[in-house]
Image 1 (spheres, rainbow, N blue to C red):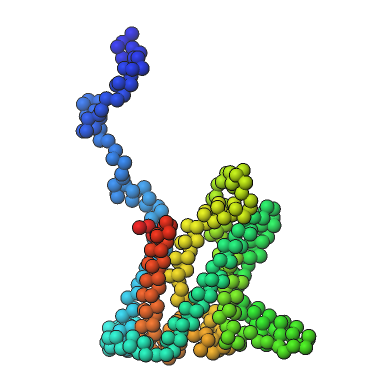
Image 2: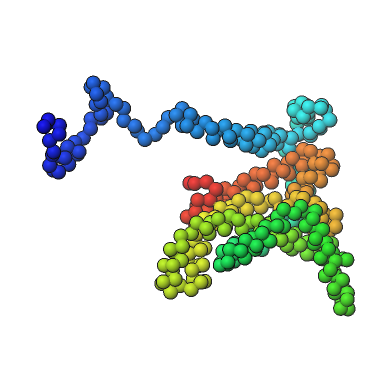
Length: 347
């Protein structure tokens, strides 16, 4: 029997295994040293490994650059008296349009219509944040509590369906229900009351817009919350039930903490989108209630830029909206960090 096959005692084996390896690496056959892996792959190796996935993302990245980031360069129009008819080439028109500096912004700050649009935008945002944002959470909790899968699937389908309707169809449905000749008004007249026309009432327009948004998009908004609820460990519910927690206690101490990171993320995104409250939806109903009640920043930009051909003035309003939205995202994300959540990005 050769020396290499002699069995060793456990103590000798452990002592041998604990022998440190030289920093230069292990020695292979022939005295050559083998390089030890540091645990990090080089950029070239990672690129070769993930090249198929990177190629698949190239079309999406190209579209993002073309339609989201490249147009940012057009914000220079906000500092010009832009005239698109100087040339058929838009870039040439920008280069040859006269420079006016901050004149467009000064006009904005002196325009009462602009401040009215800002006020309407903020009021609509707070209404939708208070009345609309919690509804998908409540619907997700309600659907998640349904035991029968068939009932749950039918409920989800019914709630999702309005999301696929266009705003023209949504407004037509509300017109048939709450318009001057709608079902509600006819029902009131049949019982001896005066008819109502909610669709043309400036006082209730903001609540009407919020109700339309809830009916159309609340069902779609529960998808993210249902996905978060599906990742909750069922053992947590069983442990809470064994400790004597009823259904409400389990929801408060198990379900809502599981949803808190998702709620914080969506809330940050919603705050960042505060100044965008539904361009198409409001534009379709602008003439019915008048610009005093329905004008928001998006319709203000459209009206001045597209209808009145005052492109520099509209671009200045849009630039102010973008800067404020970016600031709101940063502030809301900082608040999320203070609450212990990740938000849009990590610290």
